[in-house]
Image (cartoon, rainbow, N blue to C red):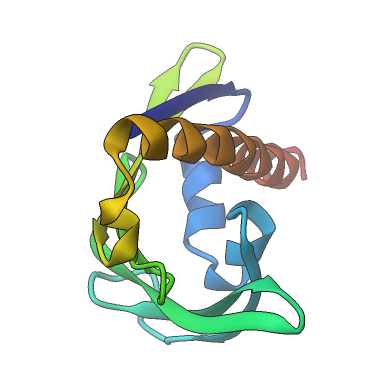
Length: 146
């Protein structure tokens, strides 16, 4: 899996406040363009966000579901983006003296995305997730500030 890390000057709880708000998903996930629905149980295990990805007019509707939810430490998602496939995304948050450390591991688990060799796929995922974690950090730090 492609692992990307970043430090933030907020608590793990502030990060999970963002993760727990499904309507914010396209604000921090690179490629997600809009939310069509957030199931009432979100972020409980099994709950889904119905989102679109891409750029209009080439938007594709799909879902992301929660596989594990252990706030304020860990969240595991299955992000679908057919016809490209699905990815397993592991978000982990560790407290530090000055805030927290964010980590995201992601890899393709289904579909044509798995056909791309890992040495090619992983660097592309890593570059995308650098921006994903930056956006998550900005939202969490902004919420923590007030």
